[in-house]
Length: 410
Image (cartoon, rainbow, N blue to C red):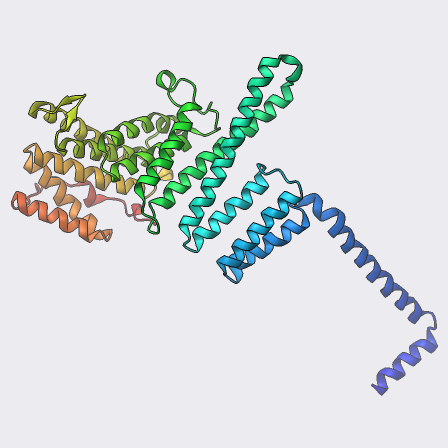
């Protein structure tokens, strides 16, 4: 310290102006820094933030209790207070910011296993958005009746965009709610079916003349063909799970056209999956008591013809999976391939083509074991035992003997 003091005294003696200058410069720099921070908080930050400061602070708290220090009750309270502050700040309740807060609340509840709470939040979002769409529709009708003096081109475009976004939000909320309903926490297939049916109804109503023109991207909800096909496929799978096979076949068939349009004619794993699932639904429908085909009671001849159609559908799905390009490959192709071959072999057995069915099962079993599907492999072995000793001609190779390991992905 003594040495430092001497150095300071010497500097003051040799350069009497230096120390006051340094003090003034330091004070000026601190003042400028404080001014810049104040300007950033009061003027700059609000321009780049989608939320008022009071709402943003509560959202940060909600995220903290969601990811950093998990506490679902405190996170839910923070989200609720953020919504209340947003209302006080006169934020648009149907703007993407406020709807985003409500969706984040549902995601947080799902993350902590509170699926019923998440479903209730999604239901409330869908209900509010549907009411807003009805208000917009009534307003549009009123303007048409009153004449052009109340109509402006720019406003009509804005209202149409708002309506599309709201309908899209309704459909997405219903589809997500259905997904939660069939999950491990709720397991309510009836409620899930209700949500998906309502989502499908909106899609059909908002499409122009579906019966004659099919689905297109020119729809009132602004959905792409791929999104429409995904929703239809999910709905059909749910009907398949609940053993409503006839309805499942119809909806799978509806999903094919927009899916093929979305893929521009290229084979896809999703198309292969839809085709093989459709063949499963057709095969199961034929086994139901009192089965009907084309509205008439099934006969042995009509059942045989329908089974051939289902086998053709399974073969088509397998072929599509085989022809998918490397860039478009995903695990759905293997799921479709396994499902298609299982369906095909089962229907061949029922048709008396035992040798062909054996060939498929024999080629499939090693691949199932390689993919860790031991239970399915054992089931195939049981079916083979029931049919007699399996044989595979030495000169023939199954698809699975040369299959590409790229398929095993998670």
